[in-house]
Image (cartoon, rainbow, N blue to C red; front, top):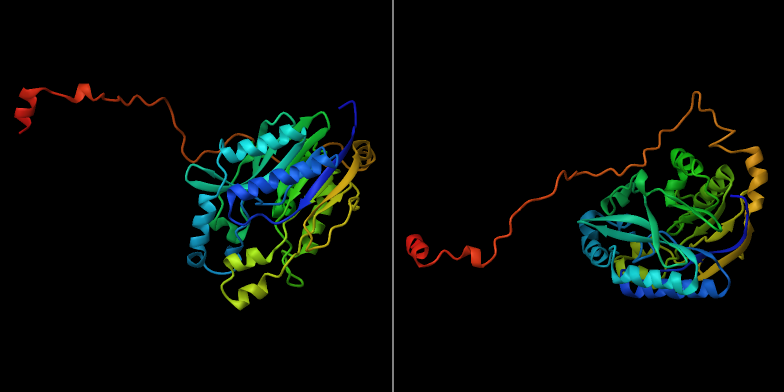
Length: 339
């Protein structure tokens, strides 16, 4: 890049219309409209925003959550679909880039996927979470290196990861190798229990580490936990007490880890905005470029396989003949023989 533009960016903090595909897509489009009307050119959404994060995996066993999994499955996003068309139209209508994290249904399985749209309304790519975290494995399958993109655009190099992907050094190194500049960091909520490993503080620490290590502007976007969500899946008082309201932590981080957007309360739905200048990345790159001059490829290196990894490979084209109805009629002699 010969130019380092100034860009207004936005990170959403909101709850989905839980397990309702159509309603959450509509809410997403309204939030895109709102952020764009305030000048945002890049908009970030929370993890699993459409149609909501499967919180029941932390509240009971697999049998307890099956009825909710069925709802999630029936409300998952397929590509192409009317849901994706509406998201595409929102991007085109507002001439913005945005990334929204969805539960994607592909074949018979579900995946956690960031969808990326450009100002022309194109779905330019997607990032599937490479490995679901702990109990999330009961919901989502794995992504691969072919769906770990950074998009070179006129306003900077855009990329993203989801939740605990920000804790993995090899993920960070792979993204650094693609010279990312604006990063969408998608999260659910920070767990409310004090000292919890999934709490707000560890999550924010991971995002700040990512911003400073890779020298990117980091758009941290999280959900909030609402009474409607609690009442939808919490069946005991113990479960209700475990999931407390709010606990969002959306913010925008500069490459030095400093917060530069307007602040949102942890239980507030809203959007945080910041004006960023990509030229501010340059001094950081002078000090640290972990995929360049600050690397040690002679004895520490990463092999990043970006080819699709398919469990079943189809070789050749099927030649199964379709027998037309008329071809299946043998005539009276054949009918008599069959009898």
